[in-house]
Length: 370
Image (tube, one colour):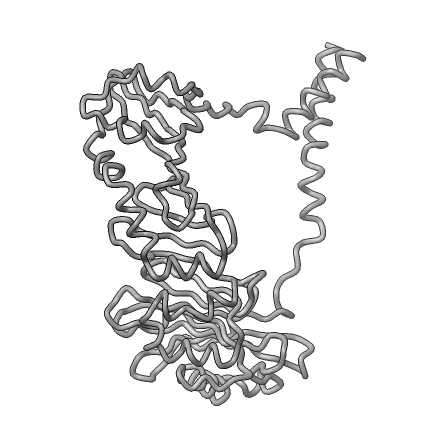
């Protein structure tokens, strides 16, 4: 009996935790921590370590990447005298070593040979001064090569490119920063949809990544509410995608009214005569994404419907072409018609292991009686 119980335990364990029993565990990287004394063992033909003699070493981590290749990752705090604005910098310096000699000296010289000059350019940028004055943040992270980041782990954050000498990315939640969006991204002043979005909503969340500019109504859960995304990759900014409430007219986005007219005239009749364009507080949006083509592209449009006085919802979709024609008009979603999961589906998944156990017991007893 004890043998049977042990056998059943092994079977259940293998069924319940297959990844732990059979999977090969991932191999950790070949890394270890060193003391600052490790730096004295490195061959430095270009004397790049001279740049860091007055810097405070916080940690040294060494990772082996081959028989002779090693990366030494150094965490430094540069001297406080480097900053005229009273900021504290945290720099991650990566030394590529071959046969214990620094092999990326040229890159290190470009990054750290004029580090004080880079800091001065960063701190003299008007937008950096504005961001620091508004937020009060004083810690600057330089863990990513060629970039200064302020508060990279908080909600409000900003990235400054050393090479481009400008702000290249940010996330703003603070209303005082959002009020100054045009200072950080001047081109937004020429985008009429930004002004109309701001007219209807208090902007709760703004994001910029160099080629795209994002506005969200909600700050705590941006994707939960209305939003609009702009493509800034071309000389003329373009609306990329959005989800916006139908309660507003959206004069700068005429395709919304056009899609509503198409749906009402060609679809909301017969079986759908009990449906109207959703305009209340629930299920009342129009969502748009690029579909295909360029300059300008076709638009995939989804319009929310309320049916039977709001007792259930549908979504209709269509593809709108730049010349005003359309196709693929259809009901895309019906919350009453969505198939419910099979009542026995979860039960079957649960019973499969027990069926296997029962079969195992049967085989074991047959062998024992043989």
